[in-house]
Image 1 (cartoon, rainbow, N blue to C red):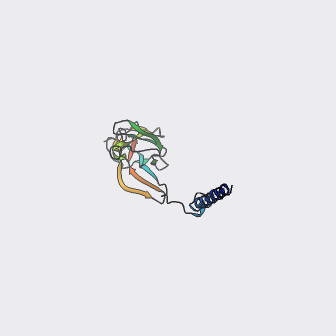
Image 2: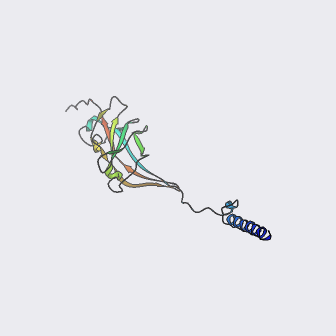
Image 3: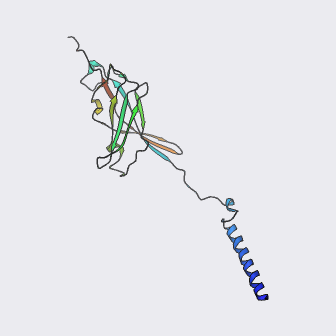
Length: 184
């Protein structure tokens, strides 16, 4: 009987040591006293396209001149990106502000292949619509009708938890539908 009693005391003692060891090891109730392992902050990376949409002067129709052009507030452009298999992977329309400037933040754009799906090769900007009935004919200035390629002009936004690479497109232009010829 004494032997059973001693085995019982020994097992209780071993259990108490195991519980004490587990608590000191961070698995018990004293877990909060140990520092958490380092986890780097999550950084949001964006691709942005910017540009300006104008109404080209009739005086310069047929050329790529922006002399006497006026910005079109509320003009709509689209950004379309295709992967290396020529499948559309991103499409969204963006509206220009009152000065004709558009800032297209491509949320959801992803590059599955780091070189072939890069925005410089994969994305184009096209004219969609003009709110001005007096200036709503498409022009292909800077390939706005067929698809303007993006340019990298070394513009970036970098902060603690946010990075953005900004690409440029355009300037793009609409033209008045009816331009009267100048008299000679």
